[in-house]
Image (cartoon, rainbow, N blue to C red; front, side):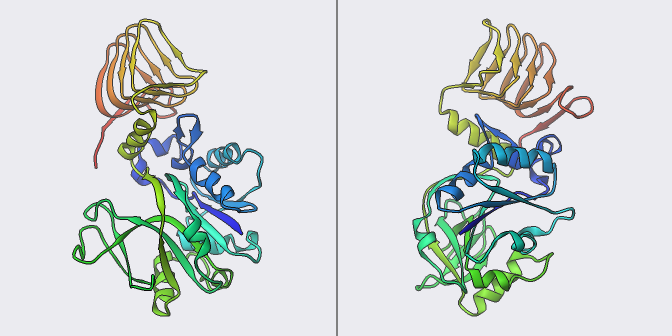
Length: 315
């Protein structure tokens, strides 16, 4: 079995951070975001993992090599974005003859994949599902009594019909791979073809799962992992007079005298000036002395952008 990590998106929902750091490479404490899925692919038995690349490819490739810890990672470069289906089709020469286990690079999960690995045949695709936490916020997958997928709903649709959350994990049988249309190929259209002949199935998984597609969702993920404490990278520097509460500080981050941080995430190299007071913020670059910010994304000088930018959290 070979793994495929989908990491080639534009990251438009993660702006303004995506202009600086691609979503799969965003730091989650001491690991890149893609590390959770990549390490689960290897733990599930994949002999190697293929990672597709598009935006900021060098950063994503470096994050994947770091997270792989010496195990084999191959890369499929997409000069033009091909979408999930097209990305899989373009990477076929790197797969071999076995099944392919697919995951997304923008989620953080610890799932028991046993039901997914045990399901499906060479001519089927099996989706990994979870009990749905919020049908009004996310779309749903609908199954019949045998586990075959019979439909999909958008957020807020068909609420009277039982539905499940798609985790981004799927197992493609070896024969199914040969039927992928040439890229660019939308995955949804391919699933519809499989569904008409009963070859698209779903299985219920268990474990923890968090999607990190927006700045707020990313901030919530990191805050959940610090769990009431703080994470300070060994290469971060914090002045003794600072107050740091339930925050995560990346490598090279600096917090100057008298600054106060509460439930903040400082990206690598971020600098908080003297007396600044931040609450519930994502920070890249430098925060001027005395600045007060709450619930949003700050992009300051030194982050690779031009000037300063403040974006309140949405969604």
